[in-house]
Image (cartoon, rainbow, N blue to C red; front, side, top):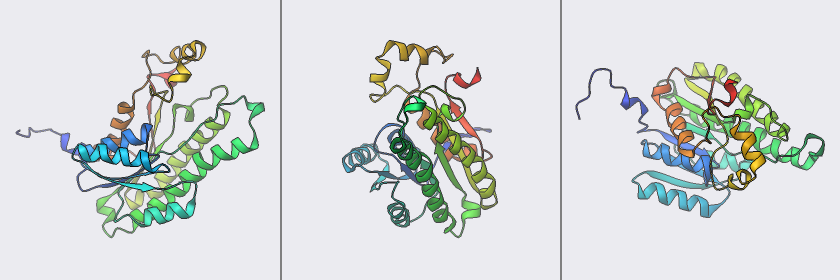
Length: 261
């Protein structure tokens, strides 16, 4: 194929880059890891469940990609440090592991509050901090660049009933993304978030089997449909690539128009 003037397709390729994806055994994390590998990156997949990791790594390798399993509980700071220290180099972090426990505000227990805060804020902070230290070890970082991608949610931009804790954590990570982007810009490390709407997955299927909940969601998405995992994965590849080289400190909202209203 002859490259034509103005062809920027090469900017979306990730050959020579090493990526780490947390929560990579399933859902957004797995989809993002597969997409990064197919774009040319060597990918390390982190999760607490070895069988999920093995299946995801096998899928990537069968497609000709390079991938490695890294069993790790991101709520364990020592384990995160050991895992990231074991990487040969790190260029891209997809900080994805997270959770939600929907409850009416007055019924939220301290145990559930601590559980969600611990994973959605503390673990994301520590993982980013440890990853950035690893990135800065590279002597050519200023020319090589680095990328941190925090997976948040449209709920980091709006509010919703029974999601006070989740909204709290995702708004926090949106603010963290902005502050970190400003601080790391002199080191040529870009920091952005990706904020999806509700996605159509096997895990969300029981939620949308409830007509009242399904209507509440669909009434708020102008495009009239749920998101797909590959739509989020495509955004991850874009933000990780040189196609987004001037993009830092912002949130790429993939929500079918939910937050435009």
